[in-house]
Length: 293
Image (cartoon, rainbow, N blue to C red; front, side, top):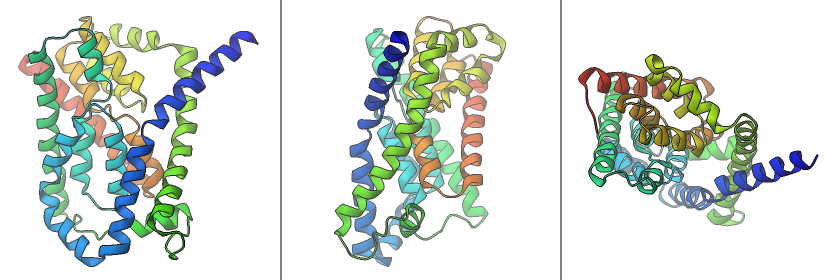
């Protein structure tokens, strides 16, 4: 019983920490979206639509900041169709999560860190433009803002004018935070029982499939994924291709927020599959070209 209580306390401590730091990102995002919906109407939609082509550039640069809270914000903005799917991809692919702190702590040379960050940013931009171009060809990119649908999905009744945009943003933030916390508790409990060493052993024991395995681990919506991948690369267990494949798809809690806020389940599944495939393809390309960082 004592060991169980120790594990439970450890899981709760980490889950609270993993969840609380994204709350400001979510609140600011929802506040901005509510302002767009309530105050600007069709003019904002048209302005955002005109500026949307540059979205992957901005998304990739913002995503490179070592905080997966930006991926959570991007997922929320995409659910409301404020940003394009290409912009969401750019943010997810460039998101650093815990990579940068690990590299700095392990004293990885600055030029190596910059090369890896640069590769993630460039790949994010390229794939963002590819996704948006494909959607334009399919005539599916010019969807109107759907911010009000988030309210209908969450049943928050926040468009009746009662409480203003701050109250509406708080309601959305609370609902999404509770969802993320619940999932994070489950993930942390599994990692606590199984151990992060198991992830390391899985990747190290399958060198021929390290790219596929690393990308699969990277999809785990928890900072432990990027920590393990970055650490194994520093230790020489993972090559450049496998490392990049895993870190490209390590979008942190962004995937959880996408599943919670975007009501199109099939679309969410397609995004996750496409994200995984993108990481694998670029990882294999890096290996084939013999690229090192």
